[in-house]
Length: 304
Length: 281
Figure 1 (cartoon, chains in turn yellow, purple):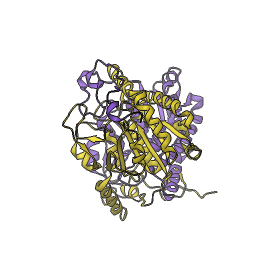
Figure 2 (spheres, helix red, strand yellow; figure 1 turned 45 degrees about the vertical axis):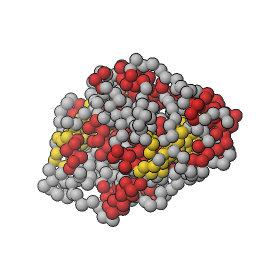
Figure 3 (tube, chains in turn red, brown; figure 1 turned 60 degrees about the horizontal axis):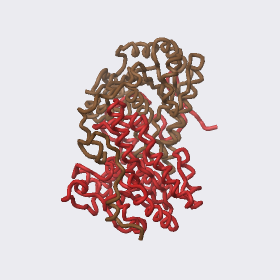
Figure 4 (tube, chains in turn green, yellow; figure 1 turned 90 degrees about the vertical axis):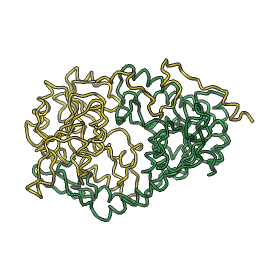
């Protein structure tokens, strides 16, 4: 039996560990948990995010060629496909806002649209081993990938009622962020977003003919540009700065399906966003802190 | 080949006419997309509910001496108040985190395994409170809360939010930023709860550790913004709770109380100020 220690009045029973008795909110303790060798869980899998409004809502004309491309690419690469919502999510948000549904409630109900789109795509890919991946079966991924399956999942992350509040009134953790996190936590080989434009523009090219394509950009730079319209959720860019694995994402035009095989082969065929120097700065700062506990002395007493 | 990009541009996206231009033809990331004045404030889903967090290391790990009096107090209070309990993790979560950290695993895995310890504590509390109407609430059954309150139950749930593998990495280390404080706080925010009370093992927040410095001053009341600006090395609640509070629609205040002092929870639920109150501006 593992040794336990008791202390305090009434006494607490501890299990000895590096974090025993430590406040997990102490900055020094937090920094001490950094590692340079965080494990890649599934390093040979490629995560694809399929736009809802940009691709799926266009129906057969956009989707059928892409489905063929998925099948082609699966011969060489392991794929996980995440599916977005689209027009019906926007409609859901509008109705919810009108009814005064709180943010978490909106996040909870919006995922149903992703579910519908997941079923649609799975029906098309079923004969090519497309299979719906419920998030409860996330741990089955190795089995399915080894069996040559193409797991298809809802893009929305499972934040549900617990969606954190923001300055705005709609959830900020949508399908783009959900799939980015799949890539990040798995240490995936690549993260590719399939949209209906050639990449990221300085403005929405559908509305502004003077919008310019940005072929490559660092996440920090992009955030500083504070563009009025992004083709990808801002939360992805913000999270990327902190990422340990997914330091490069590519946004490609899913209406030109053959770009996918090239992107999977590592070619630059859309907009490449890299974590860049911002991420490195973060890591350096963390490494410095790790060498000594932070010096500010204020301290709370409660142990959560 | 079957298609090319330029032809496809003419294959329209199937849109839904929303009668709301702001949402009809935009990506949802457009700044200023929502003319917020167009919409009323969000509703309070369960405005009578009091959300109470029972600390893991601070309460549960102390065993019978700390937990039994609190259980009796909650049972008595539930006759007058709707109480939803969120369970913390504690030393076993720390042990599990230590192992995961040693194995070089990412934040998402830590968040996923952290849930289990919190679930153990929720189930333990349920067994202790069963005879008083304590019922274990699966996050999947969250919508059944009105029924449980209607029949006088005391729902008890996991404190951790359901983010698991989708927990975002932070700028400092690999411990998940959203743990049981965050999950319980966001529960109160979503529900538009009457109160949000964190039951821990100290009177609240001090300027320094009073066990080490007898001149440390107790902070009875402080704004979340001010507390964040103080940039303390350590905090009484998870930092992300303070950040979320700044933007919250409903849960604009929480109180941290000492659950080792009998009667504190009763007084806090009666609206008394018995610990540290943290509030949004």
